Image (cartoon, rainbow over all chains, first blue to last red; front, side, top):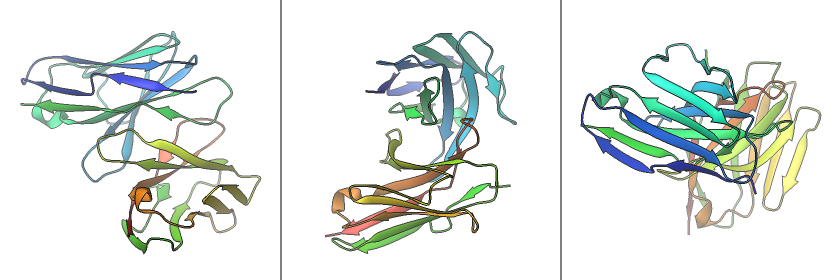
Length: 115
Length: 111
């Protein structure tokens, strides 16, 4: 149980295009979803926290107009990287948590490469 | 200010021996601690957790120890296996809120 999927697993795009990444909880209702970013050989950095039906809370230094998060249902959150640039190239990972749990269950990640 | 630190970026251990990964934290409000294992290009996999009301939690080959007075936790893997080679992250949370991750320790278990 507690499986989280992400789609796509890998995306390569041209600079200036927008990219949408989906995060789904497959067998539980995710009341809270988190989006992380990981640069090579670095730790996971929390970008934003989203609760179903409400606006995401962004961490300091993360541009909300650049990284658009939608948590439209209890099983789906999306991260859209608007007008992506090469510096946005990174590994993006989502996680989900159900009500009453301290644990987060992570998706497999999405490798974004912006040319 | 890094609230969760893993001071050893890497650790090399012989197969069959014990691996000890360490983690220190500064925020005394943290009440739940977790260890994750991560392979390259994959999401972290939950390994084991411990509540601040305990000082030890064991699950098979994995044991987590918590020393609240020292604000220190450790993950023991025994016996270590080559398949344990990965990056291990400790994480902490306060009252079920967001996780704060350490920088990770790369464990290499040599056959």
